[in-house]
Amino acid sequence: MERVKVLTVNPGSASLRLHLVEDDRVLDSLETGPHSEREINSFLHRTDGIDVVAHRLVHGGSHLVTPTEVTRQVRETIAGCRSLAPEHVPGTEALLDLLTDLLPDARHVVCPDTAFHRGLPEVSRTYALPEQWRARWDLRRYGFHGLSYAWALRRAAELLDRPAGELNLLIAHLSGGCSVAAVAHGRSVDTSMGFTPLEGSVMARRSGTVDPGMLLWLLREGHLTVEELEDGLYHRSGLLGLSATSDDTRDLVRDANAGDVKARFTLAVFEHSVRRELAAVAAGLPRIDALVFTGDIGWDQPEVAESVAGGLPVLGIRGGLSRARERDGVLSEPGAAVPVLAIQSREELSLARAATA
Ligand SMILES: Nc1ncnc2c1ncn2[C@@H]1O[C@H](COP(=O)(O)OP(=O)(O)O)[C@@H](O)[C@H]1O
Ligand SMILES: CC(=O)OP(=O)(O)O
Ligand SMILES: [Mg+2]
Image 1 (tube, rainbow, N blue to C red):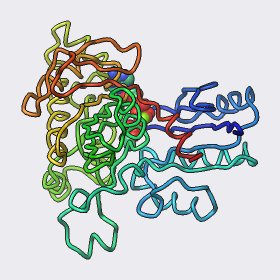
Image 2 (image 1 turned 180 degrees about the vertical axis):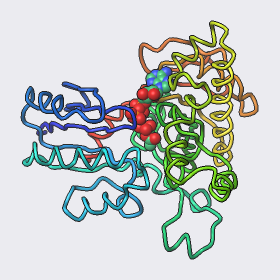
Image 3 (image 1 turned 90 degrees about the horizontal axis):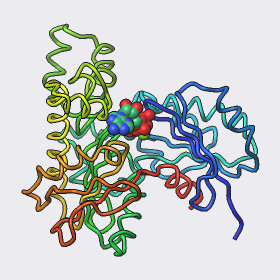
């Protein structure tokens, strides 16, 4: 079979990651800040023969829900999605423009984060809003982090030695953005992020779910402008808003261990919100075959995994997890009623697969 060399592009809220992937193997990579044209140029200089560029598209609205080759019309559709995910879509647009210029002979494919959730049952994806609003503006739960979930499902099937289509999983993707998903018989049946990647659990800098009545009150009383509200919810909330010191659990765990009360409280609120979202989406599962931690925090912060899992005996999940993270694996003790797994997020491999499937 002919080998396909894929450049994967993952513009996150905090970073930009490029990977050169062939046959599920990473040949080269670049992790940099969001606006780094010079670094991208020199990265591309040291490689050749890129066949496909796979662009992660966090939000493609209701029109872009599967991997799609980029055309002028697709490019316009993406521009229309800018305000749906203001942290992510503008970065994708800038990179699409740059890379289609730099690599005009490659096939450019956008891979929506929402694809994994496109079959969400109607009851999970519907908001109880006026029918005309829902119809007119496509107000519905989309769900995100789908590339990461698709990879986690595949790896969980390998680790548990069972077909993916049989598995009922709870998956927590904890990173800059944090979300959870319930997978029944290999398909997403519920997830905590919704119309935008702002809903759900507490995140690094994003608030997650807050009472919509509180937002209305802040606006109506003139306490905040729309711009101030957007900035606060997207950039100054979450772990950072709670702690006022860091958006990174590695700092917070260190400070909490040193006796910092605020860091300890920040982690407690974060872990509580993840448990709460997990318990909520678990309602859609016939049983739980495993709980999977993925994303940077899910992978590199065993203290958080321990606290989340250890606080969910109501779901049959227990703590006492292994802290080992050399490779993807089972963290719970043999014979655990609900095995707990840690799987490294490999959005780049998932992207390469999605773009070439
Ligand atoms: N334990 C942790 N390890 C790594 N990143 C963490 C951790 N805790 C919080 N973070 C946050 O997650 C971000 C990385 O997540 P990621 O999803 O890759 O970001 P992006 O939004 O750029 O895609 C970091 O910039 C940091 O703010
Ligand atoms: C959807 C989302 O929140 O993505 P990220 O975690 O990369 O910011
Ligand atoms: Mg990310």
